[in-house]
Image (cartoon, rainbow, N blue to C red; front, side, top):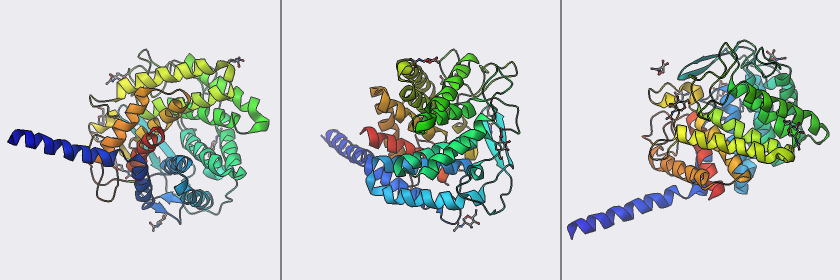
Length: 387
Ligand SMILES: *[C@@H]1O[C@H](CO)[C@@H](O)[C@H](O)[C@H]1NC(C)=O
Ligand SMILES: *[C@@H]1O[C@H](CO)[C@@H](O)[C@H](O)[C@H]1NC(C)=O
Ligand SMILES: *[C@@H]1O[C@H](CO)[C@@H](O)[C@H](O)[C@H]1NC(C)=O
Ligand SMILES: *[C@@H]1O[C@H](CO)[C@@H](O)[C@H](O)[C@H]1NC(C)=O
Ligand SMILES: *[C@@H]1O[C@H](CO)[C@@H](O)[C@H](O)[C@H]1NC(C)=O
Ligand SMILES: *[C@@H]1O[C@H](CO)[C@@H](O)[C@H](O)[C@H]1NC(C)=O
């Protein structure tokens, strides 16, 4: 009898915890409140994370507002504040990147506050094309919510800088990671694909121009074998200009391509089934590669806590883009992944202030920052949208 009672008690406690963790909308809203404790209205950026990470924090805010009108006013205020204030804090050309197995790092110079024109797209640029691509996607997300034409033309101006970097020295196409680097990697090229395809669906008088760029990037991306034999995307190309089979499989590299292919499917509807089939193949291979036995997503850098300020944000980018794929091509596997991860984050990876840290299986590790937090928030938003 005592044993039975114990089991009953345990069951009711865990279903209580589960009930809170599955309240995705309330949890996403609480996550937004916690994210905004890092927001710096003077700089229009989030304290405790880097320049490019700020674009991803802003995109998370936009994604939540797209699904939850109660936070629309907050989102609009963030966009207008960031649009006017952040460029003065752009670290500009003093950005360098380092990549070794298991480790990615952005090294910033010391941004001096500058006088800038907010509607000049060049104020969002630095020497690394991935950083520029994140801001382009962030302003497109802000445009989708507000229809503010300045945001869309900012994304167009940023893309003009990325397309001027085409071609790399590999197979007559693609772009470099940074103008200051010789590395040809996946993320800069996935962002190129995604920005071009998003613009093809939004800049109505330039549809063919942007569609052509997106198609050329996708053809090139496949030709250099950025996707390996196991169906996952490697970090980049080796000196022989082919996907380095030993390069790290990062979650964000499995993600951005999915959003790009979903937009490309919309822009090039005759080939939509082929783009969506490629996206589903990458997504399923990635889920197999990145999940632990409980269905929680990890990046390899978590094992020895070497994710640094960059790698801590990757998993949310994967979830955000997998959500876009799920909306175009629904899958129970994806839905379950969002829910499992969102529940685990809420139950195991959160502090008393609803700040969320790196390892979604837990435990919560101090200090959570805007990079770890915004990333976990993306997973909760995805669960909310499909729930
Ligand atoms: C806002 O950001 C600026 C630039 O990084 C910094 O100097 C300032 O201290 C920050 N303000 C707050 C309140 O955190
Ligand atoms: C893109 O902009 C950055 C920052 O101004 C610059 O360093 C880079 O050379 C530009 N790329 C091209 C191809 O114009
Ligand atoms: C499919 O894509 C190819 C290039 O990848 C393009 O040449 C062709 O026009 C597309 N087909 C349709 C029906 O849009
Ligand atoms: C993920 O993929 C890489 C490259 O194919 C492989 O080396 C690694 O072992 C895979 N990890 C898991 C857990 O499947
Ligand atoms: C973590 O492991 C990777 C891959 O083995 C290694 O390159 C990196 O230096 C390690 N980082 C730390 C902080 O130990
Ligand atoms: C954010 O926290 C993680 C640890 O969870 C750490 O690796 C990263 O460097 C921190 N970011 C910044 C900008 O300090």
